Length: 225
Image 1 (cartoon, rainbow, N blue to C red):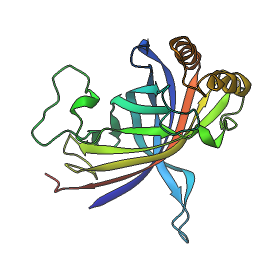
Image 2 (image 1 turned 45 degrees about the vertical axis):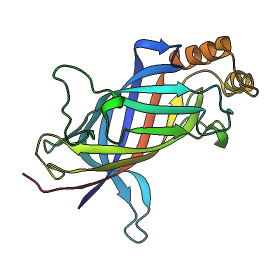
Image 3 (image 1 turned 180 degrees about the horizontal axis):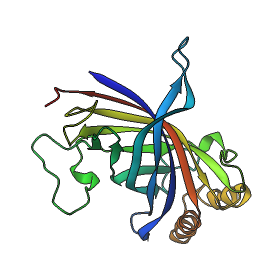
Image 4 (image 1 turned 60 degrees about the vertical axis):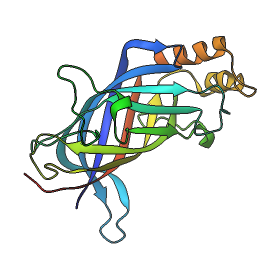
């Protein structure tokens, strides 16, 4: 069993096709630096960003999905899933989503969540309210948490050949809309949003500059090659 704590900070840009109204999704492309998480040696508590560089998180295509059938205060109202993810470590390791044992990724094509054994996905906790952006400036932040399956596919580094899980706990900051505009948009879903309200909310999110930061716990098992 091998474990690792990482801290990543990413910037996101809208990713074509940007918005899928039928699925209720908006797409972003994430990429950014990755370092070791700072840990209090006395308590084991993760205290934030460390100084040791570990590599690069992404590029990763992430879909945010709005479920208008759920209450805006429910963690199932706004969720996210990693459609095509890669976590590149400086020691040569590459983490990808965990596929079933008899599956292989198609050459030249992005992974799709339908083939994942344990997909990388999570929930926004908007019921905690809009948070102040950690990067400063206008807009709002939302707490995001989630877990998924992962596997090391290059046979290199500390995590070589391992299969296991990755869990994240972080915050995503949106440059727009303002918290008041967000609250107004969410209010329309109190009794189940219609197609126009869903489209308006997705366009608000798609038009935002987005940054994210998170601490992640990675645990894998399996013999190194």
